[in-house]
Image (tube, rainbow, N blue to C red; front, side, top):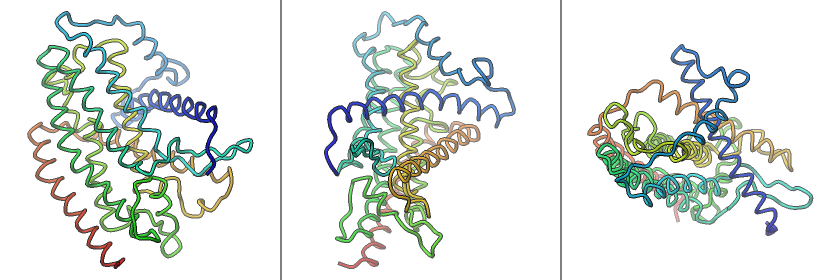
Length: 357
């Protein structure tokens, strides 16, 4: 692959950041519409045709709301915390492969901004940084409810990161079992390529259709939901107990940045789930299309998979109640972690037995 020129990289970065921010805004609209439909009520329908300008209205409202800072808060940390929560949520999109390469005016443009050999390691590292923003926000607010929310966030994210990290090891080992040299790869593009083809002519060779990959897929979804603090794992805000948790003292755009980070991480997690377990941009009989049309079809395929995961997350939020905090920790340490360890061990055994050295 030829090196991209500087101007192409700049345009690529701007488009990627704009797409992430725009998709976040309309994900909030999608969630409100779907929740309204599932709960038999009317959703946003006043701002613009059928309510489609509601995200713009929300953005304008938040920009002009008064930005209040508690007099006893640590002002520097209070200001930096929303930024620390938001930046990792944006830069994580850099390694998600959204399709094969495009060729525009003779310039080859990969639909992954950065195809890194350590793409999966980058993903794990960046997602783990997000806990700092929420924890510091809770501490800097000098509010007992915010502090409890910050402590909960640290305990919850660290607990579920163990199962989260173990679940993504399964695609790495399955990639190794399908590679010619027997070595795995942390490059997400290589993981997608390892899922090419079909069994019996119609079953995709996606990792989710393998015995341990199927289990790891559900472990990933559960742990990822806890990582992005979505219901039923939204104990860090818990309005009935903590008023609003870490975000109690935040208003205006600082408040918006926290929820921007949550929704963008949800989109990113959906992209990684589609990439590591559902074949990324690949789909039977469509992945053989060559050229720019193939790249376009691949982008539509992975976008549809991401949309499926987003709808699933909203459905779960509408269906399941928030669980008690002690039950949350019990489930993470006593249920999810042992099953994750067993899945990794079983995958290793299967890979060795089916691909002897």
